Length: 531
Ligand code: SF4
Ligand code: SF4
Image 1: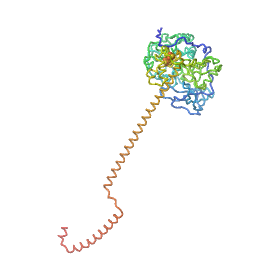
Image 2: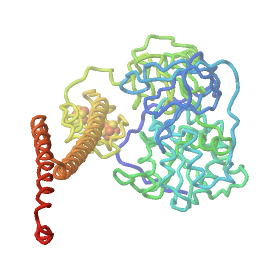
Image 3: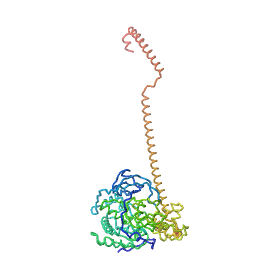
Image 4: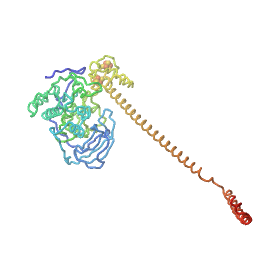
């Protein structure tokens, strides 16, 4: 039995409210009339607007290792690319590919390698081609996580079944309903990676999931019971955050700026693991996910399996629609979620929850007051940061200071904002500051790129000018040589004068010759030979 090490900061006693959305089994949402797939992060489309595509067909390309690729969730026609509200904290619209399903169930003929036949390199390729990213919320490409994890390089596999925050129950439902699959996939992946130990971590407010997983560990064939340990964690937010989970289980910290693989660990969200299993055992790419719809303003809170690209409005109406006025539609939970700018915002790979509550959710309960420097935020910060300092720097635009105070170590868990007696929307400031800093980085990179291009252009022009000058010099010296060898140019007058002189010469010559003939006749041969 593992001994838990705990982690710094965090919150206890938050109301989980999971029972609100777990009373009925996960049901598939009917295929909507339109699917919206944001394509701002992709390199290119693999099909043209107007094309008919079939389910599972790859629609976009991305840079290697990016996994930001879409596969058609169903058959239909690509009708347009439009600017459409993005599922992002900025709420901005981004270029979005619109697919109109045609009702056909035509799908790609998948080929699967199976766990027994897959090598580590093939696993990497399968996961990348299936477009799998972390489904716990962070969205990190899973193939990149695997890239630091060749066979025998890791010691520990952790399957993260800890819901990242209250209200969300999609992973709980997945573990309840597919416990055999979770356990079998954990065992197969652990064997492939040759790890010493595999853990499945679940918080103790998921008793059904825990008991089913325990039963599966006992019953799934081909698994040595000792190979997998089911770990029940006490409820403490944010236990589901990757770094905090690793610290809690192993007592090890992921190095600053590093990855879990740096300390021999691979940590995968439980839904991500199931997506990997689908890709390996059936060849199916990632096209849907389970989403929790919850809150006291929706008629039938529940979990639904939803095709990517489904508008939140379609998802809400499948759950009976709204029964009360709400300020915000929140994507995510009450701690880390963000307000959507439109109900037409689509569900994407990281969308784990839609929260609709009558009372304001995101820090709007009381008026915002000035910071009183109480330090409560410091006590709860699991990342060991100084949230009030970060707030000052973010608010005043002192980005360099915010960076020096490790702004990018902030996991945006919202614990600081939750305890802040002044109701300061701290995480909002951190997100804005991070976004501005990233924009500055992008501009710098762009400027560096432009500078390099300009420098290359100048060098090219300089080279061309030099070559042209050399050519001119060569021509000039060739001309000089031929000019030196040539007769000097003559004017018409000179030519005429020379012609006249020639005539005179000829005339003189004939006269001289007549004279010489006469002279010859009067001279001796000896005198003639002396000339
Ligand atoms: S908890 Fe709020 S009021 Fe207290 S120090 Fe932090 S930011 Fe200031
Ligand atoms: S949101 Fe960031 S600063 Fe605030 S408690 Fe969480 S990690 Fe710390």
